[in-house]
Length: 371
Image (cartoon, rainbow, N blue to C red; front, side):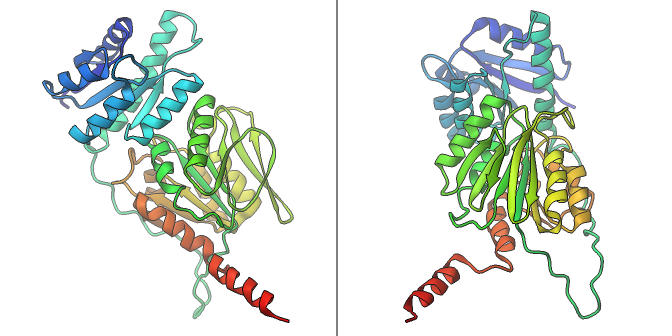
């Protein structure tokens, strides 16, 4: 395998030096250049052949956001990892960077402890994401997934999926940007609650919920306490808490859960999906999106056994086809969809068996017209 060529942009010389040392401890990685602000970064990037940019977003002069906007015009295919501080301001800027096309982010160490512990944190956080981003296209093409096995209906009776009463979504690397494209097209009269697990620290999930809420007609909020989940509401798992769901009669309740990490993740997609399988059974539509690892696979096994429907984002539109790919390869997906087709497909499946908004409007007008 050829070396991975990395370019660094950070306004602090010490950070550039430490990052260079950490990255080049790996024999497969070489730092081909550094810059102290966005303008200098754009100029120097033209003179090197880089595979990946690691970008600080908060810098004097031309900041990371301005650089990213220009970079996506000049070199739209260059992967970008944002290196950001774990603060409210840092989280908001990072979410903005992800919406502009950054591939993912790595939080800067805060209250980690010793310098050695900070180095270990950076190394473990960076390396996995770098390899996931740059090796996904070098792997063999995914084999076609086996068809999902379902019990055959009686002869002459086609299998009709149960009505969807709950949508659950899991995402990781590349998820914030993908969710930014998935949620806004959904209509304000969306007839069921939507629950989302996105792998992120606490401050970042709050910022993501705020951004999604701003850009959609649905109500998007972080789940920080037990709450009633109603149609047209989107609940995002709070960072460092799992998200659970229960059904009580006709009501759906969501709540944060502080228990051990699952798949090294808290929140974990598996926790939400397993809870949804217990509470709503066949009346669930699950969506597994872009992300590293296999979080969500075990949850999808529970959902499939309960008769729920499962969609996965396809490989070409995923930043990393880990989570969705594992579900697809296990034969658990009812369909694979490009990102741009997920919202219409979700809406089609959710509306099956229930009247559309216009039909309800017409019914209401007819009743009003009666004497």
